[in-house]
Image (cartoon, rainbow, N blue to C red; front, side, top):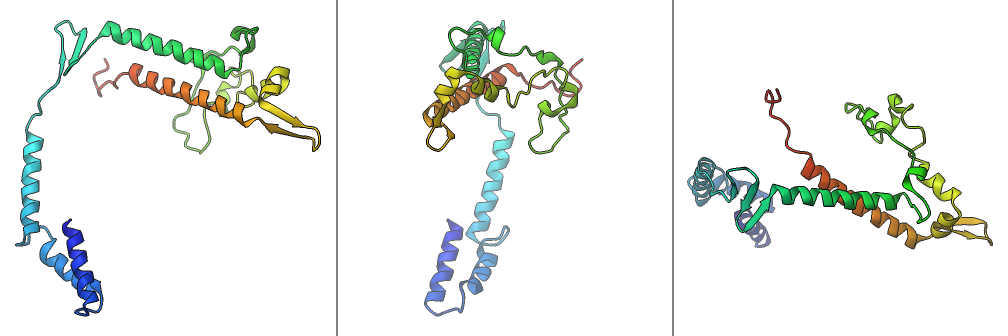
Length: 219
């Protein structure tokens, strides 16, 4: 607010013809009123603000989070959460995420995931976290070639093109101009399913990842 008042005063003086340009008086008023340590209201406000922040940093805030003696129940204001409830919540979210993931494979009722989706040993995958090239991920790591028996970037597209039912659901073939176009409604619905799965996945990563072990405390 103080800065706006100074700017407004400078513009008004220029409009009144008292100065050639607002910047001429803007610098003068800034040095007189808006610098820390000057004998002006702004200097007093700055010192008071600094004193208030020091009190805030050195004063403990009122706590609202309490653990039970057996460390199995967490209370926050009016909320009470047991570890059993939290574990049940996490299991339910995992089930929902797995269900959404199966839908992303575009499985039909007469298909089983084990016979359609390639088997993948996740624990054998390797990644190079120091690789900072844009677009690079563990799929491009040479060490994973023997583990990734299919082209993951093309698998879903190949499955769609090879399935008559999926082609009819997602693609429209125009005979008059021999073009293949996407059915936008089906594509939009699929992308919404992707967003919902990523939502559950992000939530699960957050609530199950835990807090990093402090340096030197992982013995």
